Length: 438
Figure 1: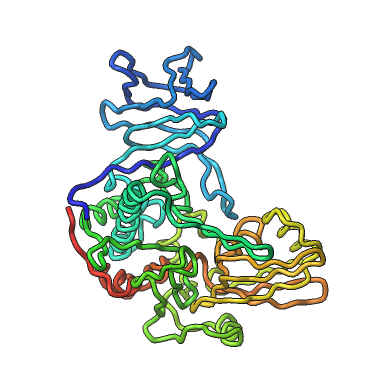
Figure 2: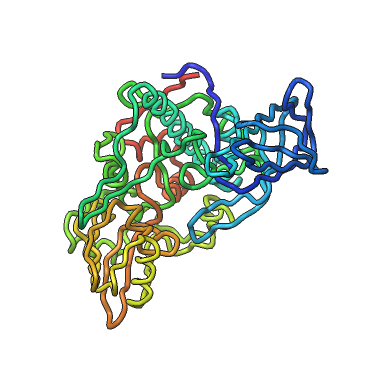
């Protein structure tokens, strides 16, 4: 395991036709070239060409590194976040650290921020959580995010020595199973969006509380069996958390198992009848809250647009659903005639769904691929039951996100109720312990 703070590379803008920005402090491009102010970068014949505000060429190369001479603040224009989700939007964002621009073979440019882990975390906590969140929640999230991040770095180093990671999809004539993970990125360690961890640099005010939470937990990790935990998180589990293998690779992870997001115990879902009863109910659960004060503490302003996360419903006409499935899957099923859950995890999340149509019938998994195929953005979760009406389908569901690991809204309620950061994270990560590694 690590013994000192590492650097992290974060993909801010990927595969853009051009990258525009503003260097707020002096950056060094070469020993002779120091740049501030507006810049633009495009890919010309496989090289990044950087021009200044006057469109005079300043630098070119397969990769251009802007090295900060002081704190290193820079703004990137039109950064998209919430990609493919219902809250997707675009804004200018400001970052600290070094900036790397890389030319891709397809003629695009990728912008990467190089920053120390603890500075990165202060931004993540402020991006994922409100500045008014309880201290215990901020500390719990700092520990979780730090563990997830460094576990990923160690996994990438492992892959670099053993070769290509395990397969992330398999298909037969009538089945497609696919999952997505953070190692899918090639030119950087993590992206800045919800696929990895939401990171908006210093665009959001990094609160004193978030900085203190990162400082107080500096170098503290969740550890299991002598390794840093791959500590996943999401918005709301819906009352039961999910097992790792139902969202990602088939290998079970002992600390990412099903737990009740509650003071008491909820029995895992094992049958379709149990799933229907569970999703139709409103059980006692930490994340079963409509307390606006708590939600404002947990959710940034744009996430507060989602209010029905614990139990929700979506209604499609058959024509709407057929069009969405065709667009999102790239497969023409004809008119969709049925949606049949074939396999569920203990939280009620579907991991295999059969889609029947007039032209084709096919099984899809895992949970995120199901969510992608059945919505123009993403369904809140794959924990749903299907009711057929004349000419329509109604999906009634539970939870928001994949459900594996830390339930953010549940953790927020626990913090308000007086749980400590350690008790929160060890509740969600079964058998894990806290260790300070640097």
